[in-house]
Length: 339
Image 1 (cartoon, one colour):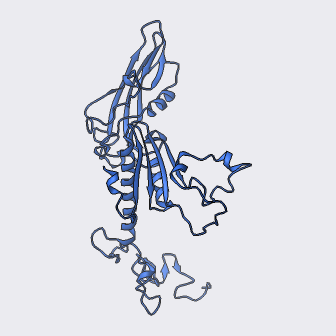
Image 2 (image 1 turned 30 degrees about the horizontal axis):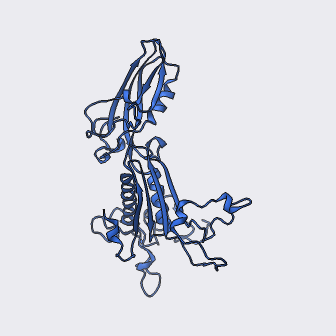
Image 3 (image 1 turned 45 degrees about the vertical axis):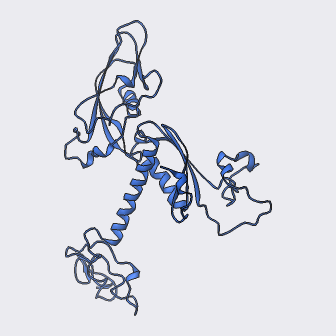
């Protein structure tokens, strides 16, 4: 995209300026948004972007010095290609009992040391089985010049490792092995004009909070400049490093997509517009959400304002009458507690 061509556009909405990009890292500025939105994007990228990772390990043979659980943990942390992960179903959404080719990828590992030298088992020794959702998902990510990948374990002569691994789709909120990033750098107000760091130092704030390279992108505060109590941050600096399972721009794009989906679900729950209804209650007692005070009648807090999803307008419970299933309530048609 030609970002220079956007210079003349009115700064009315969110604006993104990419400063540096590589195969596994992207630095960009996000402006014209508030702190809540920027931080929500950061948290979504960290914890809710779906990726593939080994989730189940079936051990057929392990005569190495490492326990089965130890090796299974190491296998789970090996990054797997997660491009086009939309083709993979979550296990909880699949109709199979445990796993199948629609919600998982099977990898096999078989290594045996027959020589006198120590044998290293690498991620490249994981073989991807067929069928699988697409041709790219589930392949171990190997980025070192030798093309070996992560070390899984070491074997001495006569030792053997034979395992069957099941990779599934998940998010880092469930387990860190599904994290798409190694780190997400996030900064705003590099000159501390808002004084958010005034109480976060012990002796010397300039030494304990050194200025980052982002400070060169903003003007320093003038000496004796009065404090602006109405000021709020509007420009945020992101530095995202991918672990290789997704390209960094795809990580950001997926984060925005997930955040949009979550906000759409909130709006749908509040407005009840999925199938064109306006929030009125159904015959089963549950509508598409309660009415807000914005819908009040002009002459007071009438039924048009605080109608709950339970149809009865507030005087009665969903069970009918002024009684609960256990008899009269002290606030129903009976006065007082004594009966």
